[in-house]
Amino acid sequence: MSEEQTQIAISDLVLAANIIDLATQRGAFKAAEATQVGDCFQKLVAFVKANTPAENQEGSANAEESENNE
Image (cartoon, rainbow, N blue to C red; front, side, top):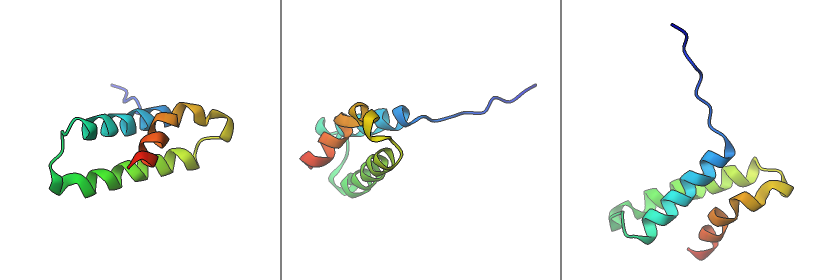
């Protein structure tokens, strides 16, 4: 049996940040969880920004806009 290696792309991290943003807007998290959720979101956005060439950052626009709106 061969094991396949799982890979995560920058677009997957952008999607995760967008999901966190949407869930937050819909009130899916308790107030006590807000700091942890926000910290995770900030780390994802920072990682995406640091690892995305400038010409490809349009794809991460939703995550960046959400970060600026907080």
